Amino acid sequence: MGWWQVGADTLAGSRFVLSPLAEAIGSLKTLERGTAAHPGERGWLDAHLPAYRRRLAGDPVTALLVRAALGRTWNATFLTPTPSGEHRDFAAESARIRRTPPARARADLTVSLGGPLPGRLHRDDLPARTADLLEWVWTRAVLPEWPRRCRVLEADVVARTARWSRHGWAAALDGMRPGMRWLGEGRLQITVSDAPARELRGARLLFVPVTSGQSWVSWDTRRYAVVYPCAGALADAGRPASVPEALGGLLGPARAAVLVLLGSPKSTTHLVALTGQGLGSVGRHLRVLLDARLVGRRRAGRSVLYFRTAVGEALVTAQGEETRIVN
Image (cartoon, rainbow, N blue to C red; front, side, top):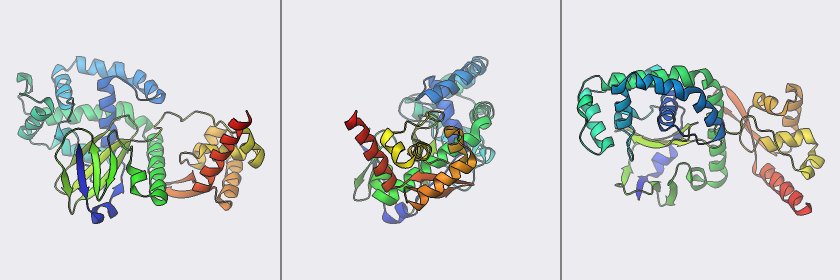
């Protein structure tokens, strides 16, 4: 079992950050593996996988490089640099991969492969080839929908910080990635696989959500990062709210629909799109729900996201259970 010893100062200074490069790496992993984690990702994969396969078919060296870098148990370290948390600029982040010394890239690949490097990868342009492929994935497959992905990622951050404020770190971190859970006494289990324990003394701890179903960890001398699949990413973007009849009778169907949809944080614009209600109507419903303390709001980047409070959660759950009992 691999775990990190996280001091109180490190945990107190930890933060959630978004990373365009991490999003591109997660998308690359999904394209390479060719499997989707949820229906929303399936549609994206169907749209972009053919072009990705054509690109690698025309560049066998890069195809071999990707397979080597995405090892069965470990990624090549130079492929997944730890985010700085200081900016959201893809070019600046990917430049770190491009600047990797060739000898270090080859050494990292022997670790991810678990054996000697194939002869065709004994070359000095591996970092540049990796950065070029990630730039292709970012430009073709991620950037066109990056604003929407940002909203999904920001919603996940708001939901997790709200969970942390109500229930503590264990609730916020448990299940963040497969095998990850809070063990207590400053120990954060990162994986169920055997791995040496690491002490994060004086380091910054970053949590980085991605919309793909991918997950990994990374670190350098000053920062540690947990990249994790955000909850419900892209999977329920167009799914209509199912409103319990009892809740609709209590609040009115339109207002109840807004409350039900806020099981995951959403902006006013997102609620308008999902409910089909006008902006003014959604705004009025939100004001009433805020006044009743059934929902809260929090700023995430440029957006204001609304979410159910503990009281709102209890109400929706109770009304749903009542409906099941009556039926």
